[in-house]
Length: 155
Image (cartoon, rainbow, N blue to C red; front, side, top):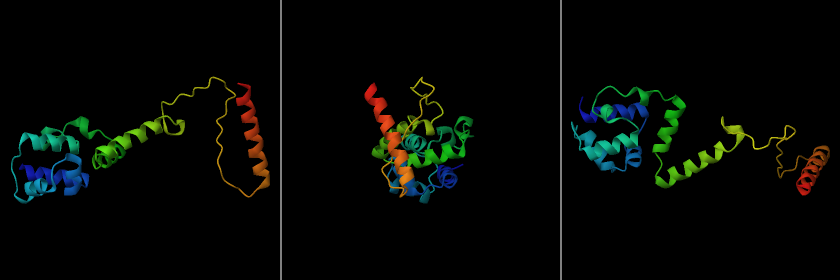
């Protein structure tokens, strides 16, 4: 199959536009547009490598060979995540990595998060700055805060 057809199929499968591919690969819009409009049959290795890396496809797939099963075993959520990630520039990718790393430190979002508290009586406590307009709740919250602060002072 000609290269431009393969690229068009990938664009369709991943719901990507020419600017999306340009951002993900570092290739100019005009280069990608030219591949498609001129019905290019072959591209340089440099272009193929950039497309492979940026679009998360194998060189074999870009060559029209059967896709590698490893690349196709991604869950739909993972494909969406990778597709969105590949649309980011380097600064955005660094920020995304930081935020994902932060999420892994929060037990609510992580499978592998282990509590650092061996005390079985430990109860995580969150204090929020808001007004519930309920004096009973406010009194309860204040009591919880006082107990928490007294425990910290004892340590």
